[in-house]
Length: 392
Image 1 (cartoon, rainbow, N blue to C red):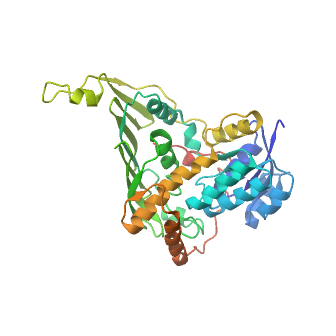
Image 2 (image 1 turned 135 degrees about the vertical axis):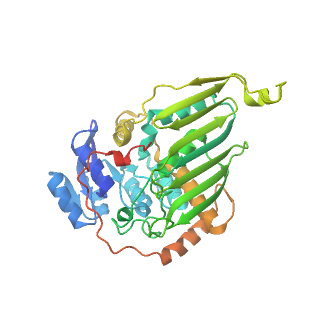
């Protein structure tokens, strides 16, 4: 095989962007051969914009068609695991949009199906392609940070209007989306948090539901986390702040790094802080500090970078930058944050999945899907526009 026949299930805003990008030849090794959506008007859009590409209204028909080698799942969140499981059973490779699912037990089953199939499984964590985040990860993995002490991420520049939430019947509902700013927008940042700093051990969270918008789910959240080594993390997110902030600060006993305004700033200590603390002979002295500001790309290839990497994994065995199985990690933090908010308790990971799902189902029973027309693919579909890029 020298070219992968791609199918896309779900051609709303995100799926249509992937479709047009692949169809336009932006992803070497991929050819778009089929799309699927339950909405007739979106299939009409595909007929006009993706001529010669097969169209399906039932994803199972696409899986059984013999026209694809791999699929991209870009449906509402609850459908990601069952569609992926069916695709693996059909012998297809899978790339799912974020989040991996809504609750962790379903994602575990998806991961098990991926492993049993032997097929390539990726997730669209496109911000992992950003060099500035990759550099922060390597900074810690190399030991230059020293013993990790603290992460603080204030990422409140995911501003959304009420019109945005009203643009889709499934949006911002427990039954349709399964969560709010943490599940939808900040799943990228939560993935980067654990990718760079590692998974925490305990979560205590304060989610505020419909604080700034007429929605069921959270549009403002603060998470406090603890690590086994004593390190802590604070994560703040909102879709109601304007102007917002995107500032990531990570501190260790040998250095501090700050990512803000598309720059990475580094403060290296010539003597580890813990060593200096107990050897200093003056009241108010501090270790000598060396400041640097490396010249790093703060943008990266984004979605197309993940698509190309996924193609390389299938065609050449290239290691995945964003393995699908790792979608469980950020989702575990999200589920723990909701469980902590609903119960007022500190949640230890791995969380009690049965308890979480029981409480989620209670929310879903009270949930009201909006009676609005789901948005058609927008005029900038296919461009992977800046609205999906890293926001500084």
